[in-house]
Image 1: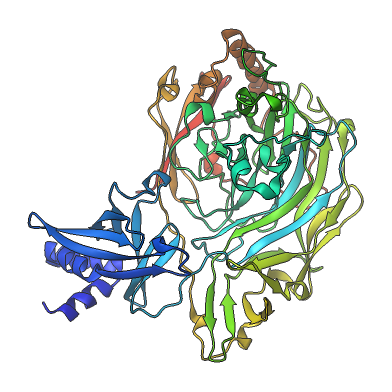
Image 2 (image 1 turned 90 degrees about the vertical axis):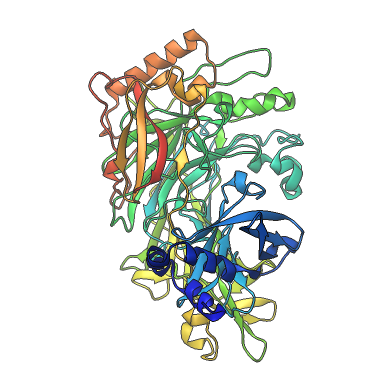
Length: 629
């Protein structure tokens, strides 16, 4: 075959390649390897790692592909034509972070480059607008009035569930409304994060005390770059950090966005419910939840006991997640107190300053717009235009979007023996909207003109306040501005028709999100000794993934085995949880229902029933989440 024929062969889509493989077998593999050779770059080029070449050499008569970047770092590549990827060799320094492949990208039937670490590397000579990162960044937020003394032992609120995008795309991370709970250390005048933590070593602007990045309970509904099984609807992830963001925890077994299970001592969260699975990729919802509400509550329960040891002491605050939906109500999981006190073992100045011993502080609620892709193009006059995805919101007949409502704070011991909240021990703050502020690009260029389309708003009666949006014209569905025009040191929102027709910006399509890696638990002893009491079961979620789980005795679940509690403590905890399983049904009214609106519905696949003989004192622990084959 001639070289031009080889290029044509490579330029077809992966589906077409599969058909060709069946007909011309190994010959096709060789041709494609040759055509992959060339220089590729990631825009914007910020360092020498963003430009490199795919090179071919012969070793002992065999072809060998290799990636060599401008920094001189190289690693081997192996073409997997069936998957449309180049698998990277052991010298790839990003393997440990789960970035194992170059995913070939085709547009209009032509190979334009490959994706790696959620960035597009475009082949030299190919004219295409690169999909850039940080296309839209900022917060849609409100501030909550500080509660009276003594109301730092719980917080509840309702948030709307809706799809932000028509279809999921890659490089996209926006959290739906949620909050951050941090230990109340307003009276403490020393650095809470020791040297060696990510926060202390990298974020001097958070100093000198690092109160808001020391320890957090956060997470909630959203879309994340690290989602492995993307879906139209948002997912719910628990998340938090016990040690200045040295690591984050988001389910009983896994860290935030990590497909490899955490080491035992770092797990941090224990499963409490015997009726709900907690997939590491996030809780899923049934379709059609546009504008329905999910109730969230983080409540301090008297589960674990205080402990004194050779090192620092541990408090007894067991911060427990409650959810309120149509088909599930009640406690889900809790933070193991030792998770919070572990950092103080080597930094005694912060003993009793963690969430295990201190009341919590929730000062705000927000949508965090973290990672959104964009396209940029400059016209002949030197004016730059940009495009972001079409981000949508449900809007009622009054032009309003409910984001978060019925925020409530709680005093100590506000949850009774029956699991219900004592409303006499609750307090509702006044809320204050913060004007919308967004920026774009590495230089954080301010985006203007959004407030002419939509603004933040607090509405509703006292005690029933809603933090939301007010749209100038939209009804039914509202959209954030999608196009922006450079104007000096800022960019101004414009309509699509204002983009010069000479540009290709409007026609650019954002890369669709695809299923990626599987979650697997380790084979360490904390998973196997004492181990599960049943064989594994499997369910398929609405995102197409398969969750495999087994039933463990509550105190034998991996995250609690890793803590190494005494036999007496295990017996106390097991007895408490058995009482909860007997007397706290998933139909109970644990936190007050929303003052307005309809509850959302969780994916029925994550609701489970204990097998016979395991109704009390056992919990379903997820051991893997994989792609459906």
